[in-house]
Image 1 (tube, rainbow over the protein chains, first blue to last red):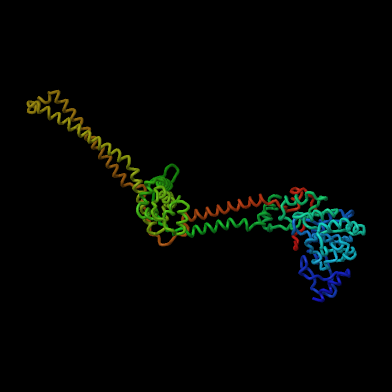
Image 2 (image 1 turned 180 degrees about the horizontal axis):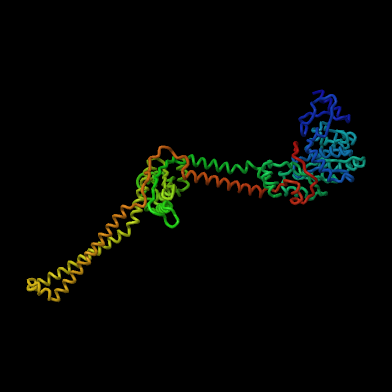
Length: 247
Length: 332
């Protein structure tokens, strides 16, 4: 266990990607832990079929003027965090200097999933207890993450503070493309407040789960009209039924 | 095509929910069939004489006649009198149209005493437990299903016997009526004849000289009138008697020429019948009901499902631009 902690601590200070415990992965496609010469691929974090879907989706987005892109959803559990991570990995593949921002402050899990230290992060940054350089953690080539950090006050106050100190603008001016994992919109006001910080929005919709009325309610009143990334589009229809019906 | 795909997606996504009503209907039907009393079948094979009506075969015509008889209370009550009526009085739940509480009591094996099966109930029970099968143009099988072997055979025997009686009665009814009329006419005519003969005798008694002189009788016009009247009455009487004899002969002939003969008499069934008419109807009804419930559930699911299934539906349903789609995220 001590060895594990040491490896994790090393990952905070060096840009070399560690090898991740298999229980933390989207799909367990990883070399056995620990390895002396760890190698990290995008499939280590996100399953390849999801990565491929995300690559095709991101081709629909104009990357030239892109500064920040938030991933939100109407409800929790629609695959928002996974797709934000996948999009960040895709942007890094494209050679963009990408920062993954964990703005789902109430339910942070990216740091845990990527195996980086949970703080200092956004909260410390907003409260002036850390700098961007302190909070920024390299994950792989071209990709860094700013985790949620340790929340002390209220989340709306942290979000207001982030807006006030213009963290996203600063990152943009440094040539970073920010991909943010936002909280869901429905259920509280934090989702809309966090979404208002981003220039572009992707609404993750889980197929066959969320009704059209909920999606419309979530979208209504957002400062930016989001584009939809449909998640979970695998078909329930077996092959024989598809063949019989001719679809 | 897109809607078909959507319907299929909804159907296969909720397949358990869709199968559940059908499964429940099958379970209920199976329980109903299992809780039904034992069924024994006794059959009689009839060879129908003569030709059918119109294009119908003789067997088909006879089957129609049996159906008509089974719709009358008098025929059904005559067939059912005795053991079958006793059984129905003791088991009111077996009678079609019994109340739901009576049905449940019957299924649970509770005895319901003090109730007498109605005439209509007995008729409906008999109609529901008699099946007819045509083996050929002249061969008809009547099958009676009953809860015990004795009851099945006894009812089948009674059915065939009553059918014979009813058929003969139908054929001889006109002749019986004609015979009764002729007998009535004969009685009237006998009175007329007696009166005419009495008038002749009275005239001769009043005129003693005529009784001893046949020549004088021949010349007495009044006596001739009386004798003529008596003679006509006698001839009429004889004619009526002749017609009665003819009608009686026709009646005897009709009584002897049965519309069918029994090729195989009903036998005492030795084994229980697994799927009687009632059971088959229940199974068919259960399956149909299950399919109807499945269709109802499918319509309900399609109606209530407002979720997005494919990228093509995004713009149409929520008016947003779609950038792409991904398979299900394992961590979602």
